[in-house]
Length: 353
Image 1 (cartoon, one colour):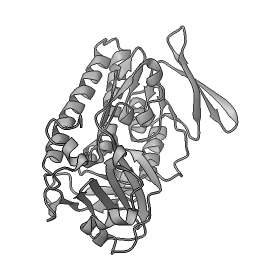
Image 2 (image 1 turned 180 degrees about the vertical axis):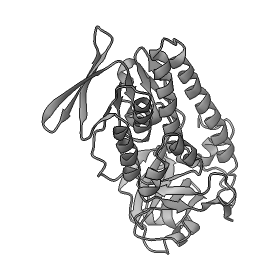
Image 3 (image 1 turned 30 degrees about the horizontal axis):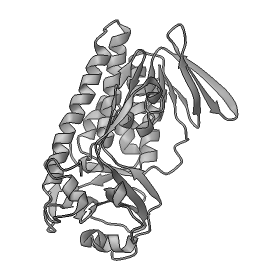
Image 4 (image 1 turned 90 degrees about the horizontal axis):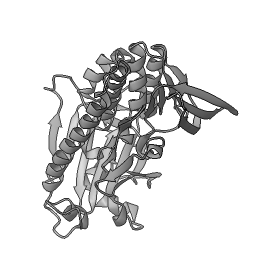
């Protein structure tokens, strides 16, 4: 098996496939040293990590406990949702590079052959049905072959796109991301709606905090960053009214599904298959689930179950459909800014505007 992409989805798939006794090569383009934006994982992530056999390994990589979520959404008055009664315990703020590296190392320990800093340059299916992937590694060319190609290369879906899989984008959301040395003992995630979008902030295990401003790409027109911060009083207060550094990265946060997500000898997982709005808090959780479901589908397909990939495709479509319904409910609850393009687009039947 060839798994291209060593993020949460790819590593989970490689780990699951390896534990099933299959030969796996996991190819990751960097070495997990570069910054990957931190995230807050929901309490139920414990169920997945336990199923993968990495719960204790996860605890050892230094995650920060998340005690709950504070939101100023329908109104400016904040609401608190704590995790005290959650059957899975608290949530977790993680260093994504460390988290992804932990999963990749677990896959390697389970038997997967892990290649880091390996940049794929070519991939095609041979006459015998096996995939041939070439990547540059340390100045040399690495050549790998496998019966199934798993595309876990993120939103770009580098290999699936070559097989004709096309993205269907549901919105134009972007995230302007920055890091601050400000610390917050509350260890909560904060979500605060503003006139043309919303703010996300959360602590990181290294003592810093991540701040992200979410808006639509066409509404990001050379804004004055300090004014955007001032529009969010809770976010500004959380930064202790110190300057929040300007964004160092602007990335797509749009809701996307790719169709199809499987074909003869290939399957797509993680953000390459379906990418969620950060508001859902389900990105990493669903990426891991997709990796595990894809691994199960591959194992079934190898035993001759012709319907395995089709059932995975159905799961992706149903998951995305359910997510869009839930996303609509959250956004439609905000009625504070009549005439705001951002919120009008998210009113019932409004995204065509």
